Amino acid sequence: MIDPVRQEVVTGAHTVVVKVGTNVLTGSDGRLAPDRIQALADQIQRIRQKGRKVVLVSSGAIGAGLGRLGFSKRPSDLRHLQGCAAIGQSFLMRAYQEALDKHSVHTAQILLTAGDFDNRARYLNVRNTILTLFEWDVVPIINENDTVSVAEIKFGDNDHLAAMVTNLLQAPLLILLSVVDGLFAGDPADPAARKLDTVPLIDGAIMELAAAGRSALGTGGMRSKLRAARLATAAGESVIMANGSVPNILDRIFAGEVVGTLFLPHGTSLPAWKRWLGFTAQPKGRLDVDAGARGARQEKGTSLLPNGVVNMSGQFNKGDVVALADPDGVEFARGLTNYPSTDVGKIIGLRTEQITEVLGSLPYEEIVHRDNLVVIV
Image (cartoon, rainbow, N blue to C red; front, side, top):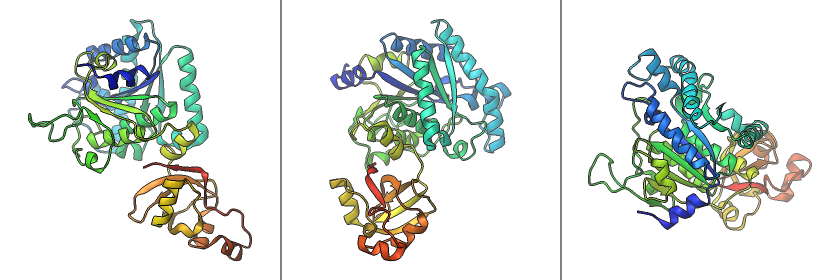
């Protein structure tokens, strides 16, 4: 069945980020499956032949290393995970290059960590590199740099990385390929469970549908995919979650067929600067605000003044990113602080005319100016 909404989504997708999970690329023995990689490469080339730019965010390095070493399951300790990634990364890239060689297409490997997105200069360097590769008609293949990551390898996943790449490039469409058919209203193992074809908004009820389980080789479960989808849709992008083991799944997606689950954008498209500020850079601290301050930020887009802040946590300098949380502890915005944490602690709850009495001067009336603030929910 062809869906007009999906046709509209794919027609406007001039740039596409495709994330593929470990289990899509490997067989039951944990080794890379060349036929699966070739099928994926063929579909990516057909997308590119329509004039679209494609970035591939690929898991599989650790899985490839496990297969090469003959391990039956994923290690739980950091050094063995990093060793598997170091062994498997070259085999993964070679497999992609051999598959795309049949189309006379070059590939480029980009290994990233969370720090590359947190630092504004490195963030822009990554973007410029990818845009240069597009100019050269090269397919960028991105993976987390598991051989050097620490917290990321234990708690991160490539779903989140793909969402950040989507925001980085302002790509209209993110496709998450795993071995599930989409988001279900019940247990996917239950034949009676209904697949959700379209999700207009990823709210608390939708997040509750996610199971916490993980696969034997991969790191991301449904919850991680929903978090990634929420990150992309909040910035104005569409997301399709589908089963990458289904033959020609990308062809069917770009034909507008109702496969997988489509998550519609529920936020306005943001400029690159505010995408980095609101959805990529990690906050150095948190400001808890009262209900009135939250309402003013969301409804009127005003600056955050000291009298709206009730508590502060973390240590930060002037110009750092801070999170804003409401009385329920829900983070709803991020912004650049005009004051270091040492001064914020002194002026919390004060009126503007009282700041001079405490600090000896009035550098800024607001802690976070509205031009440097992004509402994220």
